[in-house]
Length: 182
Length: 226
Image (cartoon, rainbow over all chains, first blue to last red; front, side, top):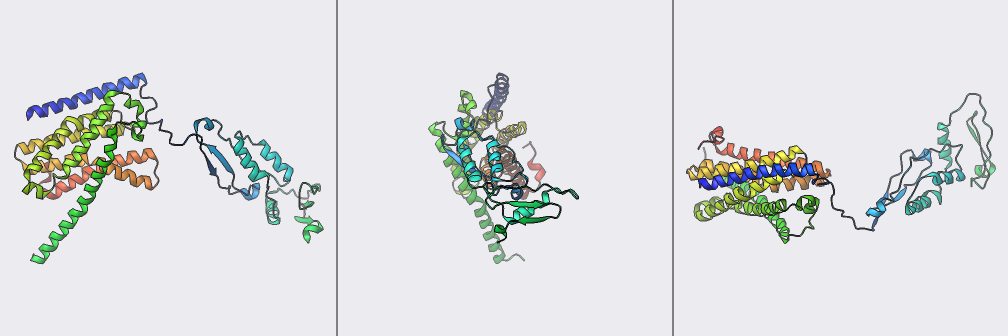
């Protein structure tokens, strides 16, 4: 029995020494590079998943009313064509128009065609028209200079479907045309 | 006064407690054995092996792994019958032979292969050190258990074997904690590391509590002398 215990103890010592030497050699030769980091790719190649991001909290003021849908490719090849998202640009009330929205989308660097199509479909094809409440709320963000009268701005009806909107900042009133009043 | 009703109630409570402890232990031990069996197809398509593809390129590591899981299966199955009072009294030969299998498998296969593989374990140096400690403690507790029974010190044999078995059972408890933390949404690596620490430390504490409860002088049970 003593011999059995000694044999097993010798085995333990051998395992300890061999393990230490093997570990040091493997580490120095770089054989352990990528160990536990290259986890198996469980995704099916060629299959894409659709991720929907929630609309940001400040969407009301940025006029981004709908969640943006980005298609993310999961296979290796398509990973390279991953969509790039630029930080959202704030659109001031003065800039707001259908034409301005078109410019914003065109400026975004979207490399993936499918993502571009989705973004275009959601944000450009049906741009959210600001309701009257939104327009009034947005006035809070417009800086007002004392006794300064801004030049009246005309927006042609083809750019803004609800017709011309005239803003007088010194009196904080909206002058709407007859069609909106009705 | 300790009347017969109180005595019966006490015995019923003890029996229920034993049942509540052993039924999950037996179930999860057999589940672990069942989940280990597919590895003996020697296929490399298991996620556990794919994750360690670099290590499995080494023949020594590969055969240590298979030897270790083979030993683990035997240890866990053999140990299940070791704590049965009925088998110990009525079928002592079963206890003796399964004990011999357990001791041989731990000392010659399980602990040495575990010690070698601990150098390449997942996690930081602390987790590797913990695996080394497990292998050494498992080996030491088993040797002490064997020594004690050879010296006919049954009580000390029992205590050291409880310590040895608690190390073998870390394989089961680790998976339970891992599963629990997975369902509460913990990340993979922190889940792995914390489950490992809780299972090892928790099992040691549980074993020491059981020994402390059963021994008149707890400190004497820690003595290396027979």
